[in-house]
Length: 398
Image (cartoon, rainbow, N blue to C red; front, side, top):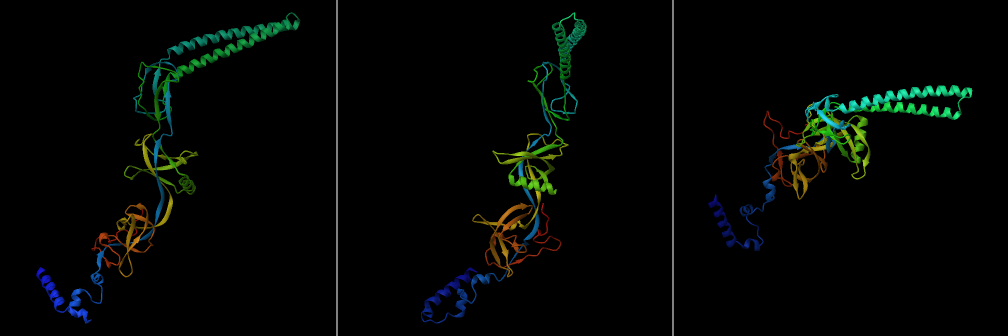
């Protein structure tokens, strides 16, 4: 091969030296030499395209895609109680295991109630004393009223006795209130779970002195169901409101890889926007029987409010040139045209085309690096038994 090329170059040099006057005299170049120099009737680039390049193609299709948006949210418990000591005393028992699951009414702490029992006995004694004083005052009022009716007692005396009666009655009420207070203290000495949920870790142990309305004993949170709270923009909140009216709103909880791991249901919207962020809080209820999600955990929520029609092409058909996304469109003449497009979201193996492409147009899906404007291509057919080369058209959006 190298020897042939060398001989050809030598022949051309001889022709140029011996017959250079062919051009000067205006005589035509001999046909064999013209063919060698590429001066035939057709351009060399066109002759190279005589054999089309076999490629895979896909048709741009119009399909329904979800109208959805994704937000990062925080899990919050619909029931979250921080239990404090309601009496001052020494902890005598802690029947539960910190961090364990508790049921409504389970005893969490017992505080020494003996001081309150003593105070209750004192209050009951004061009640009996107040009753005796009230009975005596009632008798005095009756006797004074009888004497006053006969003129043996002054009106001032009758008023004094009536005042003493009212004082005795108030004293009895005070004694009864003291009894109720001590009975409450005895009840408060036993701390129970207000609802079913999971208890937090606790640093309060048996023998610790706890103070009324100061010492935090433990918190209990409901975990099933649990709420995913998200802060939505005004536009998305309005879309959610309309979707809730039409019953088209669905929510998916996504893990770090974007995979849906749970379904949710929006059931609460806050009554105002936060003026600092121009966001409005919404809450979606999530079934959480395995207690996978806990309050304070961050997770993304994908809210779908409906569907819309969009042009979709395989993502592999997209390329980039000078920060512009492009595709290579195959014309009716079988030649490739470079086309800039504006892309949207990706749906599985397909990407949304917002501008630059119409449904039904075909795009090249492989050999993208070899594509250029005007290149002739033909569709490479798949081997029988395998999927078509496009493999994308008609695939449902995930």
